[in-house]
Image (cartoon, rainbow, N blue to C red; front, side, top):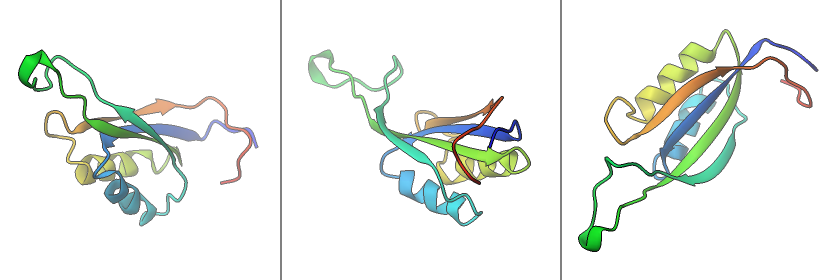
Length: 104
């Protein structure tokens, strides 16, 4: 199937709450996501002794959704991931031109 009716939601959240986010979007009918282990890095993360910077473990969630559901799923991820607070993660939506190799 090739279609341009989809959006890709990319979420980078703390590893400890990734399952909570996934369960919340699964309750909305989104049952497929790709999950990748990642880590955060930035000048605003706290430093430990000897000037060692914390790099928290994160999970990156790639979630392909129909464009009609994208805004709703985005808002659920924002809420469940508590992403309005600094250093909790990020979520954004990317337009998808074509999708192939899946049935949705």
